Image (cartoon, rainbow, N blue to C red; front, side, top):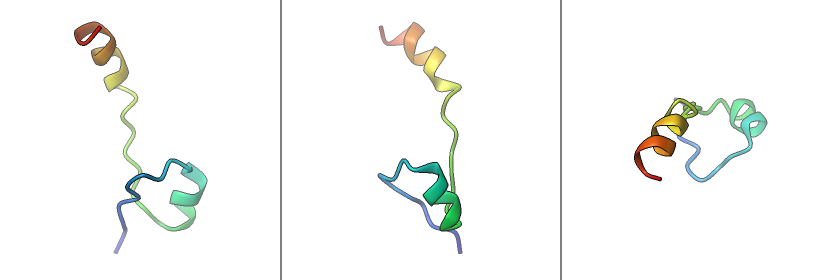
Length: 36
């Protein structure tokens, strides 16, 4: 079972440990426009 790497930001390590990675980069534009 894959684990959720909460608090871990090293992509290579997450993949090495077969963890989930959720790409949230699409939210950057929304944050810049709605919360600035």
